[in-house]
Amino acid sequence: MTNIASTFEHFVAGRFIAGYTDSIKVVNPASGALLGAIPDGDENLVNEAVAAARAAQGGWATRPANERAQYLRHMAKIVRENIPRLARVVAMEQGKVLPLAEMEVFLSAEYLDYMAEWARRIEGEIINSDRPRENIFLFRRPMGVVAAILPWNFPFFMIVRKLAPALVTGNTIVMKPSEETPYSAYEFAKIAAQVELPTGVFNLIGGLGRSVGEALVGHPGIDMVSFTGSSAAGSTIMANAARNITKVNLELGGKAPAIVLADANIDQAVAMLKMSKTINSGQACNSTERVFVERAKYAELSEKLAAAVGQISFGDPLGSRPIDMGPLINQAAVERIDSLVEDAKAHGAETLTGGSRAEIGDGCYFKPTVLAGVNGNAQILRREIFGPVLLVEPVDDLDEAIKLANANEYGLTSSIFTSNLGSAMHAINSLKYGETYVNRENFETIQGFHAGVRRSGIGGTDGKHGLYEYMHTQVAYIQN
Image 1: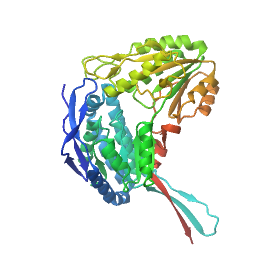
Image 2: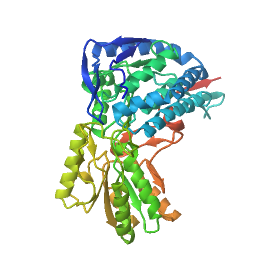
Image 3: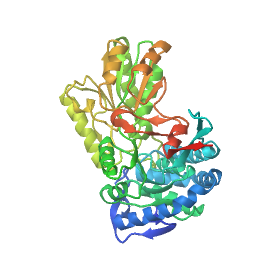
Image 4: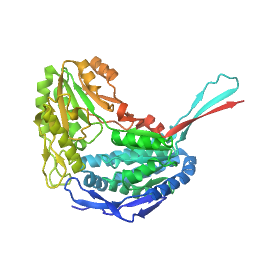
């Protein structure tokens, strides 16, 4: 197997900077093999990056938006030309199966082009005045300097999800990738250098959350923080940003419920629920975690779902045989999920399939799992699983399902399977979630608006509304 480069360099003020010590180990989760070690940044490097971004922002914002968009289009072209190589980097450091890694890289190019199209569509407003001979204009202005803190589960796509709307609206950006998956970001920094972005427009610093992350989020030179990760980390980031009254955009955890009614196409529901657990090994905030099934179809769905999930193949994404699912991100994730499942068993859960670790060399694997009969005291009912585990529970009717679905602190994605439009609309109107999917998998589109409520986040991403997250308004009152 060809390894990825073991070196990583920060990218600040238009130049690559090597660290003094490579202190953070990066491990292939499929095999446990050491991929390399990267340097941890520090406060001085953060100061330098923020200063570079601040110095560049004024000039970048005064360029016509379509000129800024041309850089995004150029990056998209290079990404498309390198899909196999970039996908291999994603697969090696994150554990994603190669077809999904290739799709992630392809969608990243699509996202760059999509956001570039908004260059000529950013709009303000003309507002009627109460005064004669007065005009009121609402302008949209860039926030300024954006700090982007990236997750590890979609390490390449999340770069462009934050960078593209920020840059096309006139912001500059300082980005910190996850220490679990830094090489995807380093590869993107090479692309940014290749398209010759103006100095300071894009900056990348590797490091830990407690060093680079905290210094960046709490920096007085930052105008907006965009973070994707756990709700606990989001709460800490929000508190840190509050010291400077810095705007935050937070996409946080989820505990997505799926409701399956008796009139649903059960085979379709099973296929979609299985997909929810195989995509990225269930390591997605959209991923279904609890399935509420009307009693008339509970036995049928449970049996078919257990059979389908039990057939999921898993292993090394770059191995010799095709597989459905790769590893979890690290051993800590395996231990966390194992602890949740064992606690569920202690609280009455029946294992329909899976239910334990999978020993494959030194890789980080947990068997695809379906549990039934978990009672209300189990931790797994409240905590985000973020792995290949589904809970199946019977309900008497749609109203009971909605009540149970809403009885947690998260509010990102939800879904319902039914052939009745009235039932679907009742669920949509009653579920306290930012997204509801009907008769399909939980996966958003780039032209939508991916946003959660409650402990699942503040603000959102994608589409027109995600673009405007990176802008503030200025209203001008002009008296003639």
